[in-house]
Image (cartoon, rainbow, N blue to C red):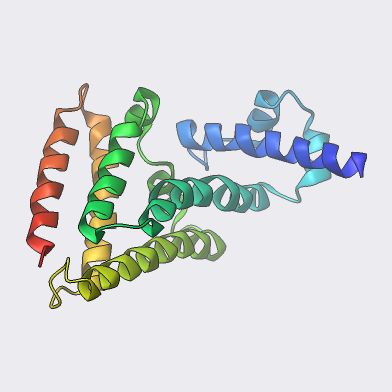
Length: 200
């Protein structure tokens, strides 16, 4: 049991260091040697836990990127209250919460999608699965909003969900080009206008 715990802690440490390097340098340009150097472990230790960099990449997507989206963008959608207010708070609170480091580097999921989304089918499927879960959670909330007469009944729920995800992911990438948050302030203003248009 103790050995299993040590093994799990080691794996989590490797995943953590890999995530940071993949995020900063890119998945393709980061070697296993660099990951293990950052983790202060031998290359042999890597192969004790993983068959390949490909397997590590899938675990980073599953345990780091998926968790970030779930905790930051899906869980808040499930709270009680007015659907429009929940949408506004979820997207605005999240965009305001990012530290400077993340504003510089953009969205980890977006970086993975742009770099390896069409590189290998298993990566594509893993990343698509995160988007689909996010979209589903948004659609459920939008439908609740329609039923509670907070959101116009004629609004196409899936289209709104896709638009909200796309705009959020897009601004995360665009912010990298600027040395201040003025572009984020404009996004926030635009989002408020858009959400007001959904109100019943």
